[in-house]
Image: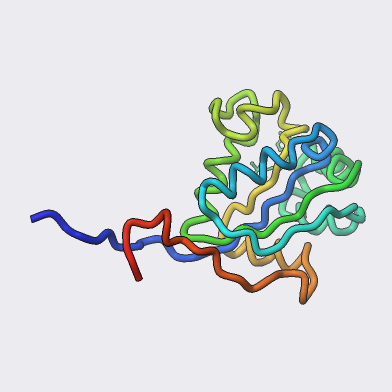
Length: 162
Ligand code: UDP
């Protein structure tokens, strides 16, 4: 006999997702938010923000020794970014799939970078690479009180009833 219910196996996580200055300048904000919304994740924080240099440096501190680091920091502060927190089961890995490979030329069509970019140095969007980094980045980019506690009603998209 076939099982009636599917187990939910993915832990609920939060990812820090940021539309980089090129994404904002090119008018991709709505398009990108739509992709996360229709996937089914919950938006817990959202703001347009001009990052100070120190924050961009701290965000990418793991890449400090890389040759592209100074250019990367300049790029991130070159205009406003859209800071977001998306929450849901497995959102860290899933968001990285939606975003695609770091180099947009290698990113699959259908992904955000695959659809909208041609250079690693202008790759439209950031997504946390682990749950720990997600929490670290959320704490870096959002202040206490900027995130909203609410529950998205999922009764129309999940194959089970609580
Ligand atoms: N980056 C770049 N040149 C490179 C590699 C990375 O400009 O050769 C930039 C790019 O904006 C990338 C960011 O540095 O998104 C962080 O690099 P990482 O390897 O963490 O890639 P991601 O996790 O963003 O895919």
